[in-house]
Length: 110
Length: 333
Image (cartoon, rainbow over all chains, first blue to last red; front, side):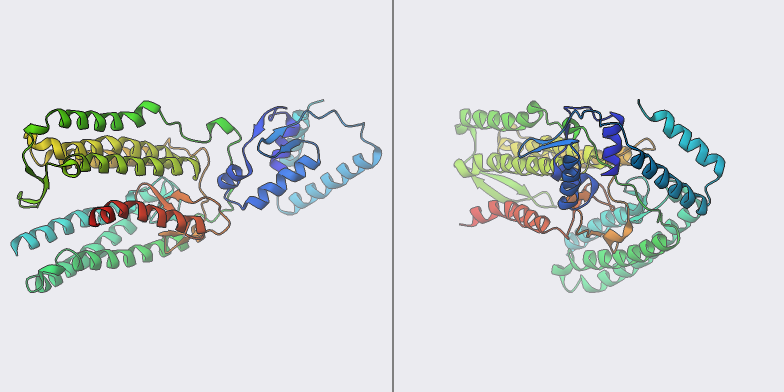
């Protein structure tokens, strides 16, 4: 789900494009059909995909969400800090982390 | 007696050559069915393991040959089966021990990243309509030709020859004898096309799939040639070895091309197969209940094997078996 969401947010999966069927995706990934179906359903609930029987999964054009409130920004900060702490604990260097975070920031489209 | 011994020795020789090279007849990154670094088979340790396997197989072959020389003269019926069965069983055991050793000491155990292609149009192999139709058109053309030269055909003509070059099965000049081989050829072509279609739709997009689907489509031609030559032989007086010879040369050439393709350094799968060795029982049998794919790239030799944890694999296997047995059954009633 996360990998697909990254592609959708970054715009690499354009609105209107059709994703492979649940069966095809499950065969490619070597995972159970239910796992892929659940992932598609999650993205459909987030309004990323249009799931219609017999038509596969179509990427939807999503309106820009309302401006994030302070709570969301706090959540982002909290999760990023937790992730940075976890990576530092696993031995990732501060310089490398700074580089990766900056690269990530540069990738974010306005 | 001599023919039995000769046949037995020849088939033993062929199988021996295959068994000695078997660990190399696979794709990059696989060695003795275990997932390894692509360069490992060329390392000193990789070479040592291959040498050790070959020595063990050679010793086992020598033992089987000695046993065969004692058994076969008294029991010619065993000549074709017992030595081969012993050879394959012993080599499988040697191979399995090497698989365990390589998997434990040199295997790649890193967590794997699964990939899927998101382009719907590029998922399946494309089948050129004319490549598929041409063998059927050729069989139909041969049928028309035979019909036009019906009276030139002998009343009875040979269709199978033994290893000694003598005919051992004959056909009559009736519709079964003349058109039967052509119908059988068309039937075999349909089965091969069905296999190619299943491979294209029920497996991941790998170099192995590229090679196997094209290989199957290519085989339609020498097979069609061999089947068409059966009833044409009495009219054209072609050498009896021509059909089987063309088929054999085609298979050998196909195997060489396939091996070069799958083992090329630049060979990359669009959608890789699951790499964990844990899915491979004894290094031979793929068993992954979570994987909905019916067909997966073989780790021994070129081509496909089945996911034996999937019930549809067994159903497909039974269907293929029945499909191959149908002509024999129809012939017997």
